[in-house]
Amino acid sequence: MNATSAASVSPTVEWSQNTHAPLGVPRVNEYSPETTSTATETAMAQSTTRAGGSLARRERTTAPRRRLMSDRRGRIDIGSWPLVARDAPGHRPQRPRRSPATPAAGTATATATHKSRSVVVPCMPVALVTGSSRGIGAAIAERFAADGYDVAVNYHTSEDAAEETADAVRAHGQDALVVGADVADPDAAARLVDAAVDDLGGLDHVVNNAGIDQHVYTEELSPDDFDRVMDTNVNSVFNVTKAALGTLRDSDAEPTPSVTNVSSILAYTGAPIEVHYAGSKGAIISITKSHARDFAPDVRVNAVAPGHVETDMTSDRSEAEKREELAEIPMGYYGQPADIAEAVAYLRDARFVTGETLNVNGGELMR
Ligand code: NAP
Image (cartoon, rainbow, N blue to C red):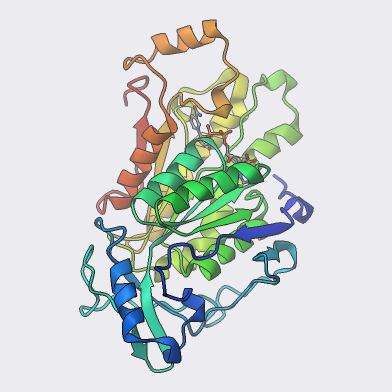
């Protein structure tokens, strides 16, 4: 399987500005000990009440962050962004570990404090969702935002759609970073992870959702097309997870940081007209179990296996095909992207679940 060429990496990255900063509070990067004031502290304390919910607040220290903006429009050229040695000391933003003094989940007591030369401010947990410009990925991104996460939105070709996903994230009061990257390319995947970490201040959960499908029987299936599906669906899981692992291990997410991979019902049933797709989704389940064993207890790794979900990927069905498919689904309707997002949110929060594949298929396959 060939890695996709670097030339296919989208040439620019756009990210949002820190839209959720409360009025009167500078962007996190603008803080200095001199800017901290009672008024600012009050505003920041108010900001911790916005999302509420069960998520613990984190602290973000401004001092070690690299700035990446190259112009006033907040764009950088991802192709010219030097890769940082992942074992180099201090290449990640150094967020302090939660201490007993840190406010409990959902409380609104965090305030700006001086810490030697750094200023510590509240920080949202961060999720990266690959392939979140459309369909299931977009629904997962929005669900995470609704649950209080800042989200790195990744696209390959659909930049405008990715911006719409980012707007939906921001509508929940969260930060969104839009990053164009072909996750089949290991270098692009690494830069995607670095962009999320550097701009959003860390990384707590990864959802490997990006995927493509192709309907063709083996006799007509070319080796190149076989590789393309494997590269996009399987190699991407390895690429992004490997790039994110160090940062995930540093995360103090509750109950733990996690990776969720998106498999498919076809991993179990097989699919004669899409053997590469079904094979790729089976591989994802095996990788999920292997990574779950490898990364425990620091990082949980699970998969979700959707049945038929109404997205662009399944929009080519004829009415007759739809009737046939629906007859096989005991619940009597197609899944919606939000149904899969619900399952991903469960796996994110389920502290004793790792190495599991959660089937979400309306009863079509009961295992
Ligand atoms: P979709 O509507 O076709 O969306 C696919 C997403 O993946 C898009 O955001 C696309 O980005 C992104 N993507 C594709 N190749 C990429 C690449 N090389 N790098 C980065 N992003 C890439 O599909 P979906 O139905 O939402 O499917 C999402 C996941 O669920 C896939 O893994 C799919 O296999 C799985 N799944 C779907 C169903 C279903 O019934 N829909 C069932 C089981 C499993 P761009 O648009 O920007 O190119």
